[in-house]
Length: 147
Image 1 (cartoon, helix red, strand yellow):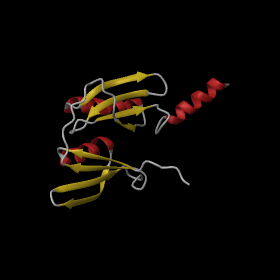
Image 2 (cartoon, helix red, strand yellow):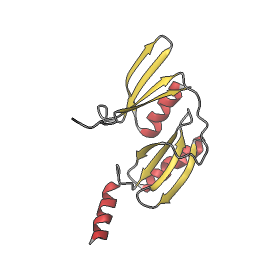
Image 3 (spheres, helix red, strand yellow):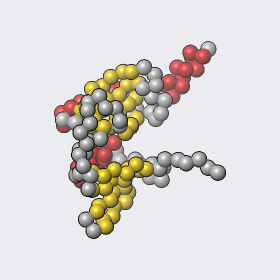
Image 4 (tube, helix red, strand yellow):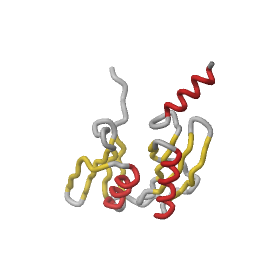
């Protein structure tokens, strides 16, 4: 019997249009499905090439989250370099949605920053974790340390 595999996260949000714009602008996601059921609106978003792998389902009717700055629950996205993390953080700071300035942490955390989406969810952008872009660098480092 196959093991369960995560396919989506569903979020109720206050401002659906603002959240769709945020995830498109900062995360490179796009709308792959939309529907309405009366007053209920539902939008499915995915990263290009991952449409059948993992999606965000955004629905109206939510409440704004008020997370503390030291609350580290978040959605994580990997970037291709430290410079990309810095560039995205500068853009987010100018827009008023930067929560965690870029910082380096010990393996396996890597280099990251955090943003607040329009509904209050935290979104991390990292480089150098053993997931996503930059993972190869750590694999090489671990192999060198084993020698």
